[in-house]
Image (cartoon, rainbow, N blue to C red; front, side, top):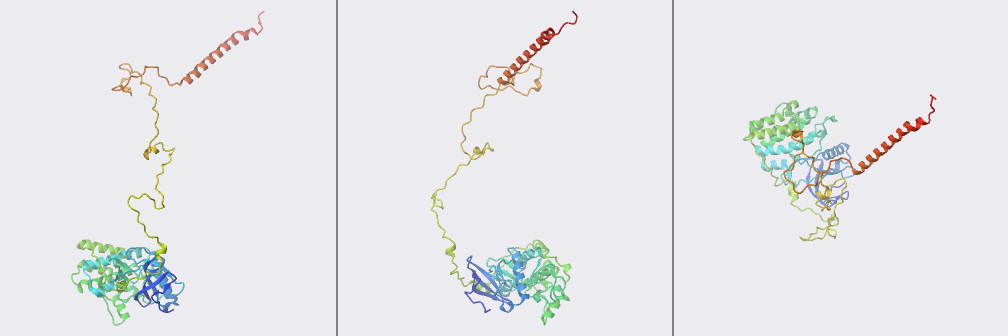
Length: 435
């Protein structure tokens, strides 16, 4: 496969607009997503590794890992393809620069700026650790700064699951930021990332890394025999509490470090409160590769945006025309028989309600001294109108009374007939035994 050129299109969607940076394994381009009309970054794997299953697996693992992670301090992934050539990863475009470029421009940061920067890194790394992943390549080159001063952790090419078994005896990582266990081949844990983050903090404060060597192996093994020096021995005005923070994060024994990024972050926050340090806005590198690329306007021609979105139309103030051309109408609600007060609650006028029949008068007050203390009815203080004449109180309806009287008449007649029958006719029909 030949090198991609400006104007080339990946899978009929991502058009190459401008190269941003090149590394040993890949090249990052600014692209235009022709489907959504937005800028993205395309990380294209170098053609030398198109047929290498190890590198393809690593690239795929990076894509899957980034897709699982959603956090403001992590670079977002949009798409991935390993089915053909080229193999690529589509990511959020960072238009600021890297922490490495910021250090190269201005040297060491102040203590508040260094801790503010690391706070953002640890917030993103905490999300990584909480999902059971280990980054394994924490360094200033992989810390990106947006044009809006947000710090994001990126480049998950070496990410591994926490419980994954090592499959190679090779030392994997960037030599200046390796943890001792990465050099010796011992188990990798979140504390491995903590060590690397501690080295980054040391470099932010001093402008240098703690170890060196004539060869990469000598440089890597130097950390097996010496502790990271206190930043105050190389940097100015570094408080002792910050020295202690770096010492704990970079302890040679992983069990003596912070267990993960979350513990490291908590300790950092405690020190910021103890020292009353302000949160500092991280500056954007002025001469970063991404910033230089951003100076060239992105070519959005030919993406068909006008075919997708209709132009916005302004409706004059006071117009009654609805967007679909018809007036807006209010439809009165249907009354709900299960809700007697439905109309009232919606402020809809109710039909006139006939007045309720007057209540029967209260019973006459008992004689003095009889039930006086127990009477629940109090005489009204004022009578608004003349009360009707008293009538006997009854709980019977007139129809009920008529039925009752009829039943009494029938019963009386039955008793009379029975008396006549047994008292007269019955004995008359029986012969006398005493004749």
